[in-house]
Length: 287
Image 1: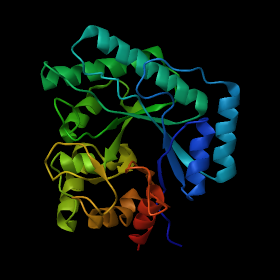
Image 2: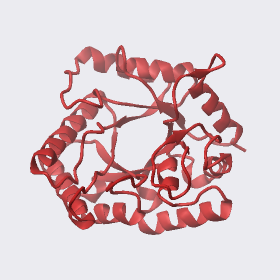
Image 3: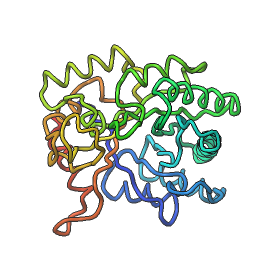
Image 4: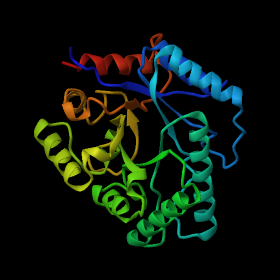
């Protein structure tokens, strides 16, 4: 019997964390990504025991697994500004604790932007921040996932070498892994549409990072061209990447056990939810 990939999407937590699970289950998703707080604010509303129980009960009831939390976009561990760096470390610490409370094993975050500092200085600050978090939370079971980025501005993570340097630099490397975003790596200049290019790109990924470090995948097409370094997500098969790349990924045994999450545009068209349309497209590509 062929093992189907684990596919879900980022879902809203409006009304409670369990609502994200229910929304995923309504579309027969097998995984779900969510924010564990308002992603555009530093402050966080307290998570109650009822919040936790409703969330865990919903996961079990609907057989939705691999819950993944996406950290706030405000966090910048590479910032050369001491106040923002310290605020970012504290912000990520709080999110790690919230994930632990909810029983979410992985927390994905954007590595950060080095701004007016150098790339090397930015990477060093990220490493220092992660080490500090691990020292502050020695027993926290949550794994931090560095997300590949498109390379807008001075963002770090648009080259596999950036993530390799961070992974090799942190003291407790076993507590850090990677989340790959298809739109981001394409916009960063990694071709994946053609099968030959797909194989070459992931040969580089395996050499520099390793598939053992790949814990999650964001499935997004790109509105912008290869190497544009502009992060704009599109519906599966409708952007510049095209459907072939997603077919390669969904049918590659190396990705079978890695949970995948759509972050494609929400809303609906002609009475059909965009999430449902994108899921159907993905399932049509599975051989």
